[in-house]
Amino acid sequence: MNDLQALVRAILHTNVPQVRAIIQATPEVLLRTTSNHQYPIELAKDKGHKAIETAIARQLDVTQFYSGKELQRLLVDYLAEVSEHYFCAGWRDSLEFEVWAVVQQDSVASANPRFWNAPLDPEQLADLTFLANKTGCWATWSDAAVDSPQAGVRVVPLPHWEAIYRTWQDAQFLTP
Image (cartoon, rainbow, N blue to C red):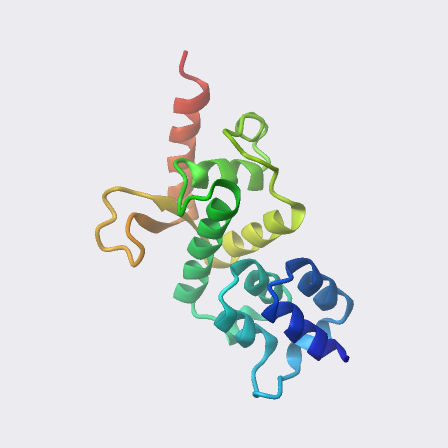
């Protein structure tokens, strides 16, 4: 089995560690097309597993495969996958704040996670950092987000998000 076949198999079987290993060992495989004339990133997008999609996107010039809005959607969906994986919830209360604390290495907030069954792994942190940097945004839950494509979730520019985060942080850790 060649590298492209192995990558396609790993994508189809949702084997995130195998996908990461293949693309790190042979990144040029991402520039080949499958027998269906798809690039691996296109196959990953079709498959819908956001960690695999983001792992591949990190290795490419994403502007060839994503619009800004698509990258923002990927960020929202990735955070929702994290919530599903760790909490069996589509969007757990305060998820965006707790994940941001870990991504930003905020020692106060990340040292006090609520009910996490395991820490985010370094690759997940790299994926989320990549998405935040590429979009210049972060996703947050808002009961007032009526016009959002996903009920309650909105994407805000990082400067606005950082102000929201600081307010949350103050309320969580500075209130007696």
